[in-house]
Amino acid sequence: MSFGNNLKFILALAKSLPAQQQLVVYYRPAVEVAATQLAAYGITVKPFRDNLHFVFEDVPVLMRSHLIFCDNYYAFLGGLKHPRHCRIVQLWHANGAIKRFGWGDPKTKQRSAADQRRFQHVYDHFDDYVVASDAMGTVFQESYRVPRSRMKLLGYPRSDRFFSKTWQAAALARINRLAPGLSDHRVILYAPTYRDSMTFELTPELKQALVADPDAIVVIKLHPLLQKYEQQFSATTTHQVRFYPQLSTTDLLMVTETLITDYSSIAFDYSLLPNAHSLLFYMADLPEYERNPGIQPHFLQCCQRHHYRLPQL
Image (tube, rainbow, N blue to C red):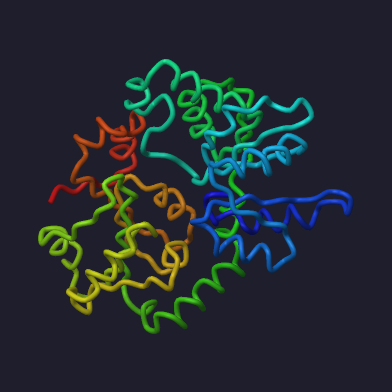
């Protein structure tokens, strides 16, 4: 587990197991909070890093397993012999993809032949890919160069909540408790994707565009690794621009009338909600991003076909 957005699925899986079977969740340190929640329900959780302790203590557990779920690319799989009695399932961590990955990432072709063989060995280890749509199945098939038969069009477990009236009511309750009055305004949520540069700049031009509607509240939600910038900008922005570190991006989507993002898969999540009104892609670095890491083919044509707007500031 490197993302904390499949907790409900993990809990349901644990509940369905017979008494003689055990569920063990290995988690990256970045999602320790999510792992702690699982531990509170009696699920065995263990932190892991790519080190000798993992090799000698945890790899033997994996080799004895009958079913392994992964929510990301894990390089160590490339060094393992696939157990005959085990199925390895890729859950991924998003409903869709705008940015390229795998063989679609231009940097992959620049790596050494040994690296490329190692990458493909990891991709080949997955017996099943759980995907949310036929289109996403095609993305995986082409990005990982694996057979179409491995694509399982089941949807993502974490997306079920978007259709749940109970979850929607709970999300609104959290917002009303932690951000009183926010739901009474038009909410514009700006949620850019993660950048390898680990920086974020709220330029005067971008700020001016975000606050063009004087009656709207603009909420900026950055990647968790960039939260220090939220603290930095919260001290210099006006009351119209707000930061809510105590609320998740998913919760904020429930009161969002207009979502502005760039290459984030949050766009797919937002489109599933009943309050989804308008979606704007602000891609100030589009020419550069098309080169590295690249965007999925035909994305711009798809935006134009569905009347999504690509504003130029």
